[in-house]
Length: 96
Image 1: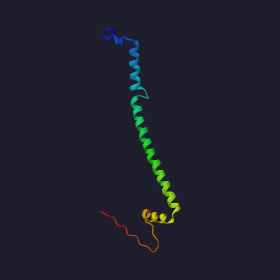
Image 2: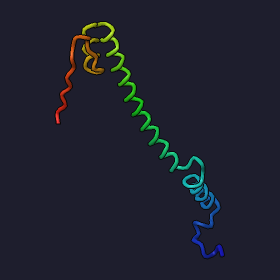
Image 3: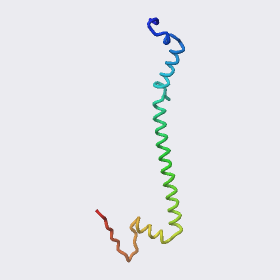
Image 4: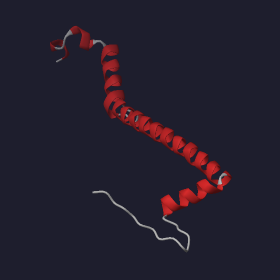
């Protein structure tokens, strides 16, 4: 039965190496497919982390500006939250 195989596949070390490589690529819990998926997930999470760090910096900058400038705070409240003084009316114009 083994005489029908090519001489390379009759060598114990070649067979053991092929079995080991097959195990590591397809059957192990840390196989190459899972490692690829995990590395893609890590890349996505790192880019998401960069986005949130940037947003935090923007919010901290806005917070500093709003706490230091009373007029800017009033403008922000009027535009963002539609706040008004008691004697004012608000007209919202929506463009279609």
